[in-house]
Image 1: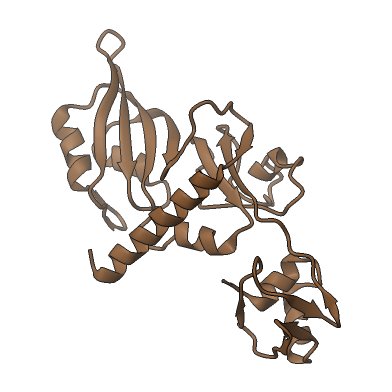
Image 2: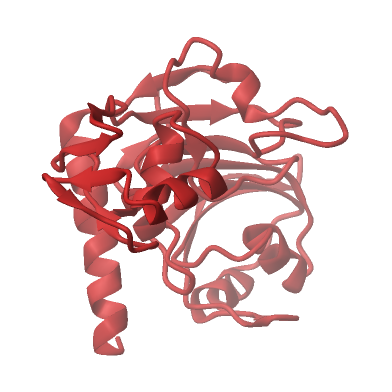
Length: 249
């Protein structure tokens, strides 16, 4: 469910603020009933919304998996004029937005959608859908250091939740390793900061999965539409996380 004024603005009726005025003036009907309440929630896919006697066109819901390259900003716009993920979405007619962030130096899987309800579920402020990364380390972290990641490490904004961490590759001659790590939170630069906390610098960081959605097979800088099954699995994963949080797990 989304706020009515947000749906109207997304449909191109007017700016968000102007849409609020239109609602308050009684010019909007939802399922044949006039709505003047700001913040009224609607389902854009199911509810009939009419403005000044004309039914608004509902934007098709789009769900994309994108392989973000390193050196690209996860933002709709950048005041410094740097390249953003939206520069790679020029063939997409719908106005999609990134779900969460990947920092400038991190590459890998990013979900973009115009489904605000699902995006909000996936970005729950405390407990997120599991996300898996490949962390390329300078030096080989001892197994006891991986145990620290598994138990949670102390950062400046609090201790992290337990993570899953294992070696994906080890090269003793070059003294480097690749660690597969799965986290269940979404703090800023969290994985990089976790490795900094165990004094293991990273040379590269790549996200390879977001819940049930995998990066595998998607070329850097390219995007693909999620399957119906992937979207439903994402919904289930987000709902399970939210349910567990409400239970206090």
